[in-house]
Length: 428
Image 1 (cartoon, helix red, strand yellow):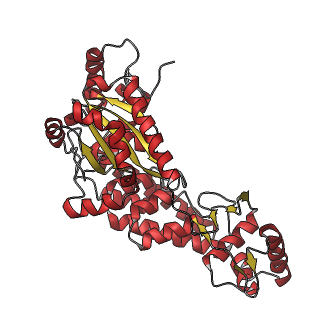
Image 2 (tube, one colour):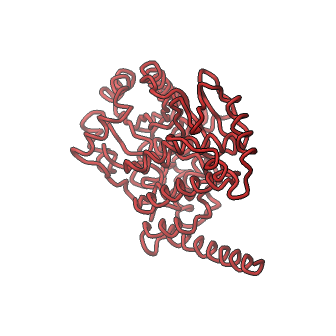
Image 3 (tube, helix red, strand yellow):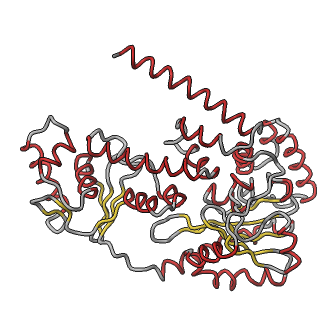
């Protein structure tokens, strides 16, 4: 079976493939959406669809978001700066001696470093393939680093497979890089050049380089200052990692743990009871739940009078809030895995869930970043978010196809919400 991440099958004629894909591309951008399935890899067809929904045309150019001092400061603080010497050792020879470039981008597709010979760099500048430019799919269309980030997998993009016409004379191979401790996406390593890169060796090379970078970061990871971690976003039961053990808690214990994390100063039994049950609560029930939680966590974790956590635990929802307070909206969105304990109806948990979601949605609206808004709207939790669809529409050029499709979605949701509101009023 052919490798779907490789651009060319063994024995394929590169020139003929360029022509075939180019014809499909022109039909696609002209409105024949069915052409995306004719002789086109599925990963490319899906990327063309995402690109068409975000870009005003197939002639769009990647914007430059970071320049001069802001760029220098940002990439100096980025985790991938620590492995730049490794990238140069493994791929620098290709960039210095051949007609290809080595590029490194962050998790949002911003190019941090682009290195190669002067003549190749000049060619790349004509399409804004330069440090500081935004090359995720929402801003540059289908391309190896941007699409590798979107699908979280190493791949090649060959010539006319690029969505944007100015990029179609290039071929590239890229692989995503993750934080080996948290699994968070850090960025991607890319090799860009001519058609000769459409071979298994270039894909294997960038994949091996990404794995080497992750191994280096893992071996040199800073020691955590927290005793444990709690994960509650996008799941109905908390996962607690503490003392070398990873365990999943039941629903009620998950709710109690979240409430204690939200109030490190401690809570009385009465306060916890109200947060769990509202006004309809028996003190005996709360004490019984807390007694069972203490047996589950152990005395080294849970204290009483007031009830509070004795060890320093971090939580995924607290990390999202910290990032938002620092104005790091893109990182907060990347760390957000879904609603906090979505199945819980405990009043205190419901308030906290709404607080996290509202802060993140407000930050996304204020940022007016097309790529971030698109990421939210394409997620399971954001697909029906009318307010964010309206914010996204404002970032699109007037009379563009993406704007028209977005307005159609807004009308559809407005009707659905109107019907739901009407039905709710009838029931009342």
